Amino acid sequence: MMTGARIGIVGLGIMGGAIARNLIAAGHTVSGYDTDPGKVAGLAADGVIGCGSAAEAARGADLLLTSLPTVEALEATVANLVASPQPGLVIAELSTMPIGVKQTTHDRLQAAGMTLLDCPLSGTGAQAVTRDLALYGSGDEAAFGRARPVFDGFARVSHYLGAFGNGSRMKFVANLLVAVHNVAAAEAIVLGIKAGLDPERILDVIGSGAGTSRIFELRGPMMAKGVYTPPTATMHVLQKDSAIIAEFARALGVDTPMLTAAAPLYDEAEAQGYAEEDVAAVHAVLARRAGLAPKK
Image 1 (cartoon, rainbow, N blue to C red):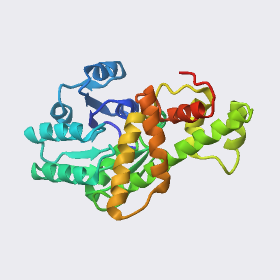
Image 2: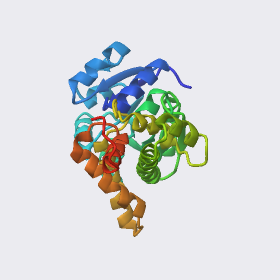
Image 3: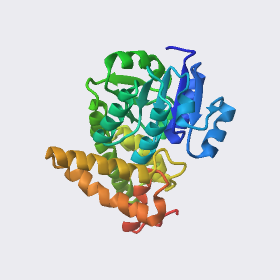
Image 4: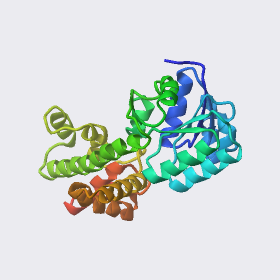
């Protein structure tokens, strides 16, 4: 693993903050920027050098990482970088965004002499803390090769998938499964509890058999307790990602009945006040429907 690189990070939320801490632990110097000054200040004790803009975080960096919640945040970041271009800079975009948006971003940065890699992540915020993330990389292969040793500082594995945009295509496949598995886990746990089974025994026994999934293992404990904080990925973010996936599938003429069936449950969870809680809170919707008293 490479050590001693200077890394800039734009976006210090659940993912970006965990990544920053892991990169510092791996021996890198990290400069960070977020539109929320509190997030920047909160990481100062961990060694993150606070910056006042994306361009400042990128200045002198060997690699810039962007982990952003919305298209608007990405567009604002790109505008700031293009206004203060740093030719030769490699930027790894870690967010889940429409491919067309990422392609436009790539072209704008390329015109300013900078290289954008499409590198979305698979994993929860809790997995980010323990460096248990999978990175789906695409774009310029030489630039990816230079960045890969840095990826080793915060991801368990990084895959190079070829042409720009293939990373996002693979992430859409992964996140479709996450959205569906999350609802399936909640549905199963509610059924077991309603039938009189002990929640902890449900986790132990189902987790040992063929019916388990990574999502059941990661979010099942939150569902069993009926406590959905602190969030590892918020309901609001999952809804955003699912809408992107649904539109991508429609454009390809692919039917997604399981994703379509899951979506209203997430909408209902947000309407019930769980927008900023973990996506495990879809369990609360099904528990309420089953007549189980929610903890909230």
